Image 1 (tube, rainbow, N blue to C red):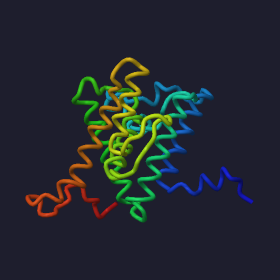
Image 2: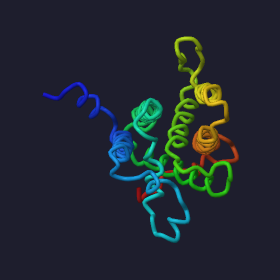
Image 3: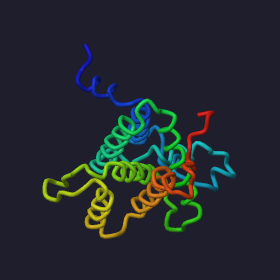
Length: 210
């Protein structure tokens, strides 16, 4: 008979389950000293000249050592990725995989062309991208932050950004980057196709091979 934890785990949609599991196993491997974070982070010199291509993937999987901060990031990743996959992308696994792939590529490009976006790990910005897209697609949902602040879902990324700024005393560039990438995706996928000049064409339509 499955335990409640097993039941909860297998109720998570497949793509979200695979990503969260990979992220947890990556941090566990670092915690057990099976691998060093320096082998995982985004280092373009090592990618290009050392053929360490796995860094293009592993930099999205490491959310730091097992800690409260790690649990915070995994919670938001699992929660909003699951809600996205269960609602807007229900029975559309290829479309959701395409969203993650496009977002990851956009973040990688930003890390190259924007000096302030040069970060060793991009998992947190990717999770923030999902939070932003979910919040824009659910404008009428009311949320509560710490039981004190009540607001509509579209304000969620900005509330989290402000809270992070308050706690850390500096602007979290990863969160800003996630908002920017999420907004571009939302505009091209949800806003632009409704414009008369677009002809209803979806620029980011999932390719047939996927």
